[in-house]
Image (cartoon, rainbow, N blue to C red):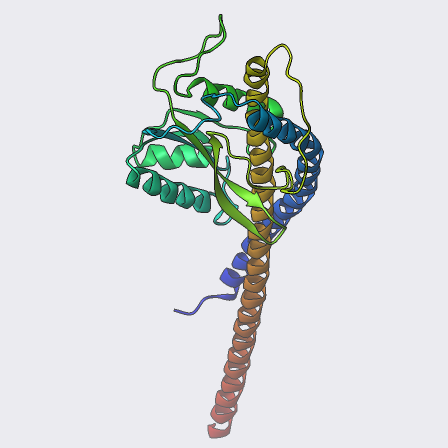
Length: 310
């Protein structure tokens, strides 16, 4: 069935409207990426020095702590899933959820029971749609996280560590403790490369990223006051808050980069459609003009033949 010129023009107008929207979203994402990168860079010095302090504590104190000591009989693991609140970011959320499923399979293969903590509405929707239980979720800050968000998440997770003893007066749950905690997020490599990653938050591992001290770097020799146990009890939560905050910032930059890339692709596709519809509209207009000319010529010839016969 032939498409009329009017229908092609309507399609062109509709696609042009869509192109304006995707172009605006692309520009917004591009402007926010810079701020996200600046936030990550601003948080790096604090995280680096805190990592040095925790490394020294773990190395020189010889203290057994639930957040630093391996449990050979670990049976309960938790995964913190860092996804996005909104879509239109390509495969960003699905890549994180796929990495989560792969990590879950590995943990279950080791005989561990897995529970989930979620950030981002996309992760929440994914679990609700499949009727899969999760312990707690946080939403509303995926593209602009704050340290308060990281601290709230960290306090909740630390309080659920197996054999963790909260300070007197703290209202935190003590049932359903976890032996291991992992975080799945998207690591920001560059504007073109963002990759899902899974790291263990506790028992403590200081092995990856720019925050980790160099192998050849000499750790400072600390004196612990009032005691190494109390210092460790105070510093470890701060360190985990910093690690979670760093992951949230990287995930935020990755989400914005993925959204910019997806919206640029959508804008380019819209432009291709506009050009295609414009070409088809011109062809339809030319076909219409040719048909009208043929009808006029045919009518003139018919009149001429009729006049000649008379």
